[in-house]
Image (tube, rainbow, N blue to C red; front, side, top):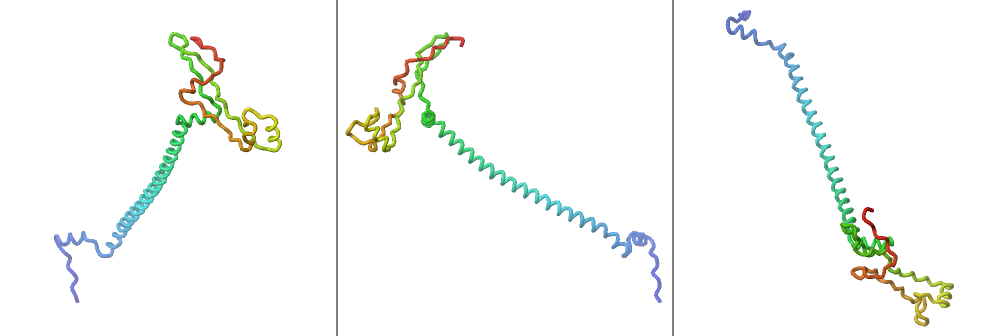
Amino acid sequence: MSKPAAPLKGRAGRLARLMPSTGPSTAARTPFVLLVVLLLGGGLIALLLLNSALNEGSFRLSKLKRETTELTDEQQALQRDVDSRSQPDALERRARELGMVPGGNPAFLNPDGTVRGVPTEATAPPSPSPSPSPSPSASADADASPGPDAPAAGSASPSEAVPTTSAPATGPDAATAPEAESSPPPTSPGR
């Protein structure tokens, strides 16, 4: 028979008592391993959520940049439209379409209250009258009594008449155009 192992004495005995046996060591490591696995899994899930949030922010940023570009293009187009409509010749053309006429001679007030210049009313240049459309009853009336815009007798028929338009008065000659005799009363100081 074999002899039982003698108990260790001294330093070796103390070390043997500190070392756990093989059975309980497996059970003691299980909570630690589960804790490490849970921490690693939680970290990976947190990283995944953070990455998703960053991607969502990136998509939103690119969408906002695209909208900013579209709005900038629209703003520039509107600015070009405003600039083209605010040019002097475009303003003059639009004013004439609305029936506005160039202003008359202005009068200026001096600091002492005297009026310099004679104010005159703005008058419209003569507008061209529209040519009547040829119709059977209109052609009989036109032959009987020609109007001021009708061609001279025997020169051309009303259907062959070319309408003439007068050019609008602009430039330095516009100020010397004949104007109405009536003028507004001069303003007095204090009004």
